[in-house]
Image (cartoon, rainbow, N blue to C red; front, top):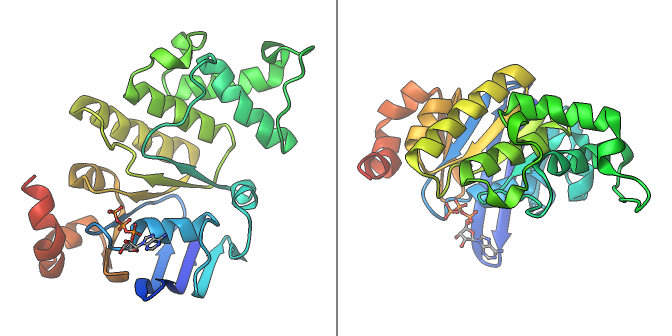
Length: 253
Ligand SMILES: Nc1ncnc2c1ncn2[C@@H]1O[C@H](COP(=O)(O)OP(=O)(O)OP(=O)(O)O)[C@@H](O)[C@H]1O
């Protein structure tokens, strides 16, 4: 039994069948990539995991509990976090404050900054945030404002903001989109380190095959809303249907 079990999920948009009887079993502590051409249904599927869309049929179980009908914040509290294509950080705050805010939200369920209380005086939260910043390699810059960071470092910060909430499952939607090759490689290394050190399961949607094959333990290939193959990366590489439909074009880019 996987940490995330998807069974018979279908989703229509009017007359368009965007997801067609999708079945997936995501195993704990693995990196599971979902690939497929534009319009295959990857984002629609991800949105069914985070409560943005309700499937027409099927079940989505996380740790044996149904996610269907839960609000996005309830899914987040259950242990699922999402990382967006463009890192979302508070530009005017320091790197440390950016990490302390989600730590407060996780501890208190909501965050209200009292004018009489300084973020920096919250010792235990600050220590927790600093430990995570150490893990992602941003501890020395913790007092710098986030606005001046490179895209790669913003991704590091965003990962720290997720990690401080202690998620069990992290959904990554094209985590290296728009990055230079060196930022992409740094992000691959960062994700590998986090996956191993924090026992977090990753589901990665990605077009860049260098990223997919560097990270994934398991790959599901979506085509026209249906999982056509699910296998280990070396099997996916050689699979004739996948070669023809996806990797042939992606590798020649
Ligand atoms: N809100 C919506 N209303 C109508 N059609 C939609 C909606 N969202 C997605 N679709 C359609 O559903 C299909 C699947 O789209 P989806 O965005 O899930 O694909 P994708 O694999 O994520 O594509 P990409 O790689 O380009 O992001 C597409 O045909 C898309 O046009």
